[in-house]
Amino acid sequence: MNTTDRIPLYQKIQDYIRKLIETEELKTGDRIPMEKELMDRFDVSKITVVKALSGLANEGLITRVPGRGSFVSGREPEAASEAPDISAATVKISERAAARRQTKMIGLIMPSIYDYFAIRLIEGVRKALGERGYRPIILLSGGAVEEEKEAIKTLQEIGAEGLLIFPVDEEQYNEEILSMKFAGFPFVLVDRYLPGVETHYIAADGRLGTALAVDHLWELGHREIAICSDSPLQTVTVQERIEGYMNALKEKGALINPAHIITGFQVESLKDAETHPLFRYIRNRMATAYITLNGKLGVQIYQMARQAGLSVPDDMSIVSFDDPTSIVEEFSFFTHIKQFEFEMGYRAAGKLLEIIQSGAGRGGKYSKTLIEPELVVRQTSGRHRSAPSN
Image (cartoon, rainbow, N blue to C red; front, side, top):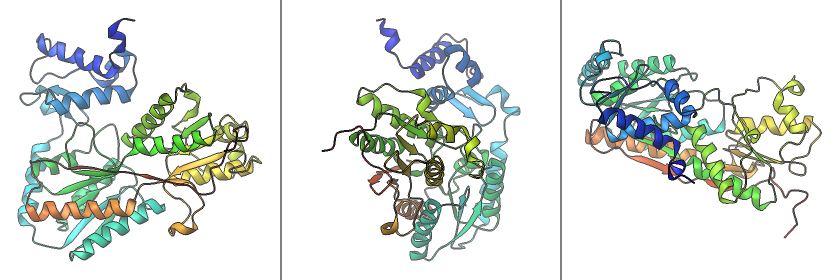
């Protein structure tokens, strides 16, 4: 085998860009090839390209400008006139910060509050802030980056001393977040981070979470294990969890079945579930076990299985991320990956107050905290029918 075949694809992209810079085909401030061009040239996914560019950005070799592309570092990109006016926004944020008095208010921006994950996380934030005499103000972005931008500006204008943000994970970064970073406005990202942008953030270890789920189901004799995400975007969180799933199967010597990686769909209503492709997948028993990347989807798959005449866990098993069934853990019946969302919110709020009190909002070291998830075994996972019992 040629040794170059063993070079990871993302590294081949990095080597290609480095060569363009070294040979001065690309000079300081020049735009590097767009993501789509790199995807076509190397026949790779967007995930691989983002990983390659994030690595180069972390090295300081390139600078990523939201919505405009990436540029060779060293000076302002030649296309800066077209780029979002980060510097102007930074000045505005600095002015607001200078005029801000101690309000004891902290802003919390969430996409939505429709599950127990969000409720537990918010409760952790509220408790940490309350212990220090602060109170949270919660705004919802609805998963839209424009709404998130407006929420950030609104909370700054009403005097929030810092922000906790569960960010919308889109192809284009929210330049308001970058502006806050450059201005030194205190904020901490929760559950997600922005590839290539150094910030304070705290999240659960998604790769480890899916590995725990795969290990559990494998021990129960399952070999046809599907992983499901109904996120309309290939978010960083989704990418990391799928990577953990694939790595766990590879370690067991199992082949990766692309048909078992089910993403990019949504279940609007269970009234017409029988016409949904996922329902047919479940009814035809394409997989014997399902890992769902959120609790709501775990419940929907459970309900689809019952509509298809299948029993959980006798006919199929389900492991969900987060507990979808009860805010009181003792009454839960879903096997799930516990992400300690209360602790996540508590620690994120504590970190933000530490940044505010130390005045270390700008520069310095950024803290990256990964919380180790835990497998909680309940009633939705069981031994596969053909597997020998212990």
